[in-house]
Length: 50
Image (cartoon, rainbow, N blue to C red):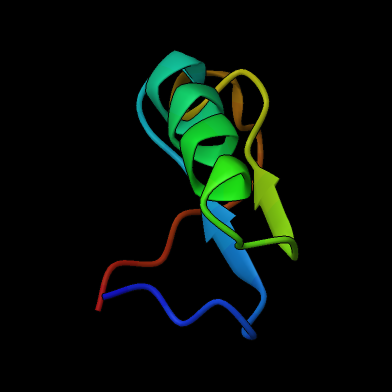
């Protein structure tokens, strides 16, 4: 379950699925959303895996 009152960052490889997921979540009450435009493939920053 996604907590509707928590900020949420969505990401995927290309950015398309995360954008679609953000639209669906917004329609269902989640408002504090962001998605990584261009996805991980477009990210130039450092990736840290834990």
